[in-house]
Image (cartoon, rainbow, N blue to C red):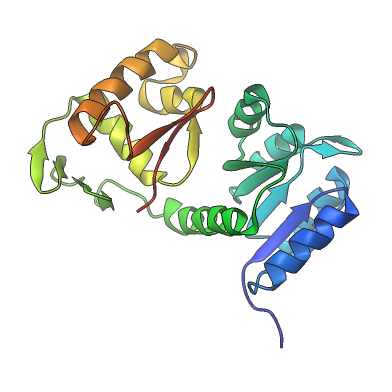
Length: 232
């Protein structure tokens, strides 16, 4: 039986890990391409048009972060980093370089498949995202044409900054957004390092949309990295 699912490019220099990923993905009808180096990955990315890239950072001919940055110069293909590097600095660097998500080895197959589904859904909708959409995540409904936000049916008044912050998180539900990414999108490039702005406004936003702001369930913190809105 011919596999007709999404094409996933696995960039990984360790043969056992490539074999594991190939087995797990083909069992779910993904079509798998494999590259053992950055150079090989670039060639496949340009000629085979993968729909998702799984990228290890420790490649024999360079750092995966540099490869992600290079791919991002000409492609919006989702990139999910899979790496043994678990430090916050590595995660932030990869996400800021253009990766969409980050999984630390070892990880479970179900988590990997869930992240792949999120990446594919986001890629399918990112080109169509505009201000005429109504966004819904859990109890939150954002009517963009009317600039109206409701939580469990009740109107919630947001400041312009809070509104932009909520829309950004909702449009990227399921993805980790770094502090720098959020600050650049909401406040502009000149504020990319001013994380205190983000902490203050995120706390205000949570007080308005979370049932328990001290234990948020809608917009969760990725410690040292950024924030993620849970996907409904």
